[in-house]
Length: 366
Ligand code: GTP
Ligand code: MN
Ligand code: MN
Image 1 (cartoon, rainbow, N blue to C red):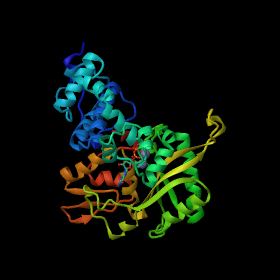
Image 2: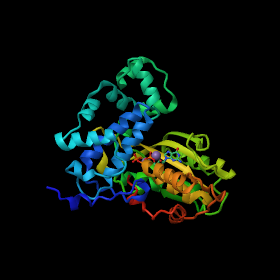
Image 3: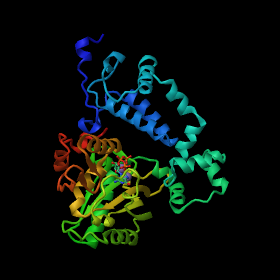
Image 4: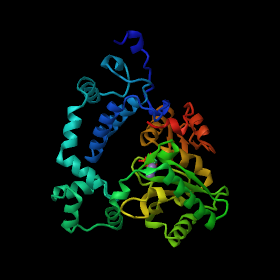
């Protein structure tokens, strides 16, 4: 039985960026349920509901011990009526009936399978489902026109749905480092995304590339991609100018040099080590890799913005806007009160500008 004194122990800040969230999750039974409902909401383009479940899941991830009774949750932020109902169900019955029925629904299963194809989002999957396409076989038989990304995604479906290990991420890191060294001496590569947060596996590998001399990074991405292509490392690549300015929630209007900020979505062909060779005798596997080039002046913001987690990033921007009257992006921090950009060369400085205690990457797993 839990005493009132123990109940009072949970004191949790309401923004995820004020909390230290490690990978050590004491409530995975609850966070798995809430995350699945968040995912289902996102797959159905119910973004508000998705964020509400994500916030609730993140709150539960930050709790220092396992929750066994609803009374422990009194006074905690981020837990709406719906999330509390799900938590209660799991605590009392071991499972949430809503989660179970979602998992078994034909629509959820189809959305998962179809959006598991690289290049297929919730809207495309929904359109296909309305045309009676629920799985890969039906998709192949349907004669749907696929774009280049989707064709590649379908071709490498199994590999791309197999988690990437840290060892594979490191092997790809070495290739990327070799590529940038070959095309521009002094270039730097930083591992970002989930692996920087200490995750042991990921759905892709994320890298940020820069050069210590401002301006030298211009034109770097096409050269890196050309080198990788010439060495046979790429199964697919699409380089785009960063679309951050056009995105509807992009707050900070960055300096004019932002049009140099480029991103490459790619699929690497990674040769397996002897140990990883499987019964299929395939000696390589496909791995999703994201490459981003940033000028050194924006590097700290880019590292912070690309390290994640997605919810941690969202909460940082919400904190900046709502609590500090500032606009944070992966390019810059703008102070709307002083009407000026705040320069930073480290993540620590950015947290300080925001009036937040510094949270290291390993504690940003919200
Ligand atoms: P897994 O890859 O699933 O292991 O997790 P992850 O945390 O690495 O996720 P992901 O690779 O999707 O994203 C890594 C970080 O990059 C997250 O913080 C995202 O918010 C961020 N990110 C992804 N796409 C964009 C984008 O288009 N613009 C910006 N500015 N950030 C992005
Ligand atoms: Mn990632
Ligand atoms: Mn990524």
